[in-house]
Every structure is written in structure tokens, then in C-alpha cells.
Image 1 (cartoon, rainbow, N blue to C red):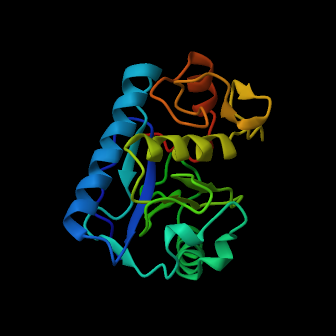
Image 2 (image 1 turned 90 degrees about the vertical axis):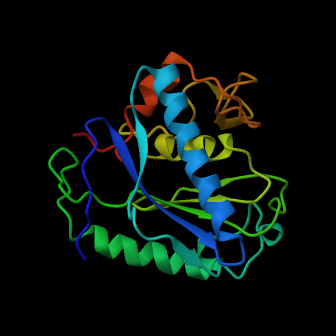
Length: 214
């Protein structure tokens, strides 16, 4: 299948966006677009680094029947238990293998992240987002209905840290009790995500191996 992409002239991440077919299509698509715009604006305004999140398939919306409501998913839920997402991930991983692995020259870049919007208010744990560390592309992010626009940016922040070129998966300013989260209230990567990104976080985010460059 041809991909009618025009490669951005700035660093970018290709993401496949999906949503549970039980969700209202129009409102969910608007929500996804708003969440992407929030991500792009916070990185541009605070990191002086025009990193953007881009649609892997800009023409097609991926509608899926997850068959698990958000309230059935908790910290112990394995990705393999969410079969439709796990199957989609495996399919995309195989497709990715067909592409040039050099992120600086790849004219059809691989999909780096699957973002799935889940039916249900919050996860069983009370969280409003999960980012699965799959150790290879595509990584997986789940967003329930109660999540605000900052949840997507927070979870992609986890993925950027999971894929750090040095192998250090913790936040750049880790909370000693939750090293994947930032120690400072109000920060994007605080356990209750805010809207601030520090210079040291920006530097570490740049080291992610999933960022494609023009």
C-alpha cells in the first residue's frame, strides 16, 4: 500500500491512532486531533525543539473492538491479554521490517507508536493512561475516556524515555519512589501530569531512538 506522506521538515514520530468502535467516532477523532495539537505545542513552546507527533496512516482511522473496558485493565494487565491490540502490534512490527531502518533516510518511516483510545472512564488502578514498554517498535499507549489532552503527551513522554539511546528508561529528574515519573509537581512527567518540561528532560527526550529526522 502506498503511503501519501509528505515528510515533515522537523523531527517527528509516526503514530497509528485507533479507537474502540463503541466510542463516538466524531468526538473521538476531534479529541485525538486536540491531544496531538497539545503534544506538538508543548514541545515547541518549552523544548525549543519542534518535535511533532504525526499520523502513520493519515487517511484511515483504525477502529477496533478492544473487548476490554478501561475498568478491566490495571497495572498487571499484559499487552497479550488485550488481544486485538497485541495482534495489531505484531502486524505493524512485521510491516515495519520492510522499511529502511536508517531513520535519517527512510522515505516510508515505520510506525513507532500505537495509540488506542479505550472505552471506559478510567483504568482499574485509577490511572488515565498506560504506556507499554515493548522493547521494539511499535510501542503501545492506551488512553481512557476521562483522560485530558495532557495524558497523551505524558504517555508519549514515557515512550521517549523507554527508547533512550543510552538505555536509561527513567525520567531525567526521577521521583525516588517512582523513577519513571518526575519529582516536581506540575511537570509533564509528574505522576499526575502537568504542563511543564525542563531543559534536562528536553535533552533526554531528544535522545530517543524512535524520533525520525528529515
